[in-house]
Image (cartoon, rainbow, N blue to C red; front, side, top):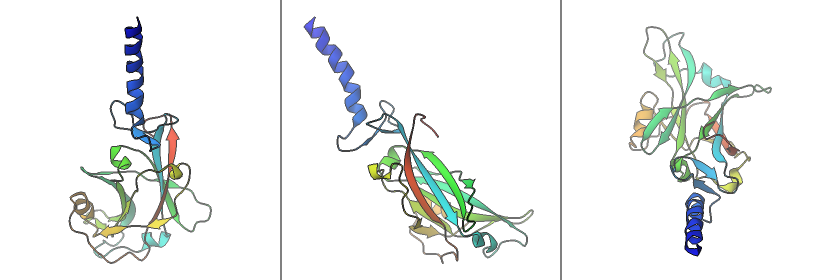
Length: 202
């Protein structure tokens, strides 16, 4: 009987040890799939809320090669070690009108835990029957999650690097040598914070 109780205790404790991960970190990857970041103390999922802003004049400054009458649109990408994909920033209404602001809430994974993800933003200029033109792609790298980031906005920051427009996403995804294109007259800025949720995905 004592042997059976001891075995039961091991089975109960083992998942907790694997779930908590490193004792010094408030975050860990959910057991057993290890695809989602959780807050160890609460057991809730960790999401990153990011805001992107820019002076409206950015939309009035087309790049070289943009067709007459081309319409500008925000294009955002997420970068991680194995590649890239598009991401969606929803417009945010601002009373001041000083900036155009967008917001994204994203699921966090093991790549985020290691500080290996980033976001890229630029504008595309499209017109019927014409080649789409892109301005400079600005890239914002996220640091590893820290408990101080929970419900606390970071300062607004400028991009840490940039690439030429049209194939900048391809160059970034494939880790081509760094580039130093001329900066836009009205650069993007970004800030972020961590939020907890009962939902795995936002």
